[in-house]
Length: 333
Image 1 (cartoon, one colour):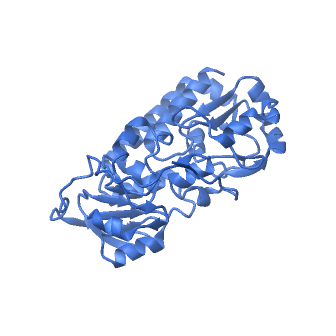
Image 2: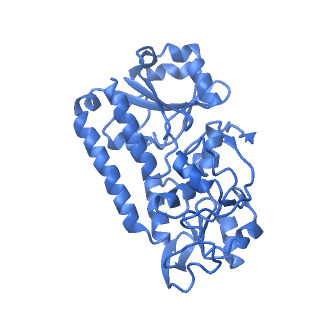
Image 3: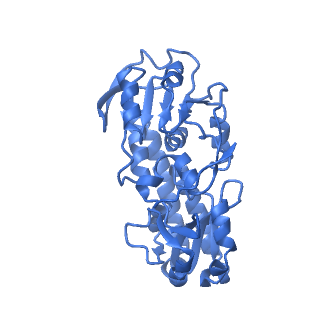
């Protein structure tokens, strides 16, 4: 296991949404090597012809109108976000990029499902032979159109490319993935569950929500930190006011700041920073938490800096987890 390279350039939604491995690099997480173990269960039917002969349907993707299996069984994904999206939709992919199954990056139940799934090379430099060996009936791509086009041209399997290099939000992307695998009914159930939790928390903590100001932030390299995270979509739906000078519609991005600019947090009642699923901050975030300027921030001095395991928003389960976390924070105000 090797330490991921920390991104040193500006992280907007475009650079961050290169998959969970890119997100892991942004937050200083670790990346693991290739896993040669057998397919997972659920979507990983071991029959080579699983899902074939069961009819087809068409899906509108950014690479055209694609004919796909009506009920795909052997799905390969070229990015880590799509793996977690599929799990939520009830499908275990048969192939994922290297470094997907990181226990620090996802709930234990998700890690258990992905830990034995075969890997297909690093994100962006996929091994076409490894993909073909898995006999997929569908390939889902969100970031690597050229690689996806090559797989489609080789007729390895139908390929749907849903471009996430633009300003689409996480819930818009999972809706497109759900359409590709014909699991929109399952997605509606998840969305309803999330919306119900949002309403519950908004109602139960209306006064504290109305009278508090929040900001999410994470540690960065070389004396920098980042304001913002896709987590902000959940914060806004809960009715939380976003402070620290984060512009409307900008909070879903990662906005670079220097430690000397920590005084922008002065208007905040509460702060949210990321921890991994083992509860530990990444090295860059820990460096921020240890800095004297951080400790002088009013919300920090008041004990209102809270940790979140769901900073990297991947699906509705993560969003519900974020709502639960924020409710716990509101109770402590």
